[in-house]
Amino acid sequence: MTESLTNPMMIDQILQAMPEVWAIYRFGSAGTPFERSDSDLDLTILAPRPMDNLARWTLAQDLARRLRRDVDLVDLQSASVVLRHQVFHQGQRIYCVDRFAAEEFESRALSDYVRLNEARRGILQDIYARGRIRAG
Image (tube, rainbow, N blue to C red; front, side, top):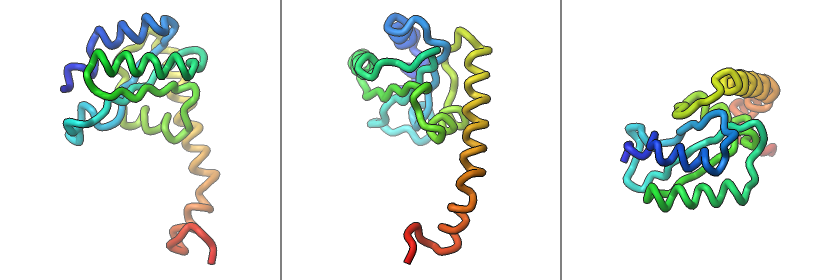
């Protein structure tokens, strides 16, 4: 199953659909000890601009057909701070044409995550102290 994780055909297909891609990352359970036979392939794309949602969905469906497994394709420009952190902390960069742009984006994303945690520290401490999320 892991052969499809860095399959050159898969990367070529992404680049044909989005030639301006700076980097592609794999994250999630695929390729890890937690992978199951029904695990999907989680991929993220980093490009200079956000990808059109319909084009991204169509590309994910095309990849799924060719790879014979479900593919979840995420646009890092549009992803949440928490998801970006997960990708960079637990994922793997499988393609990169512009290392400087990719590493600059990763650095900003990790800084955003640190700021988010600082901003919500008091809220989380309150939740842990009370043992619940809602007041009452």
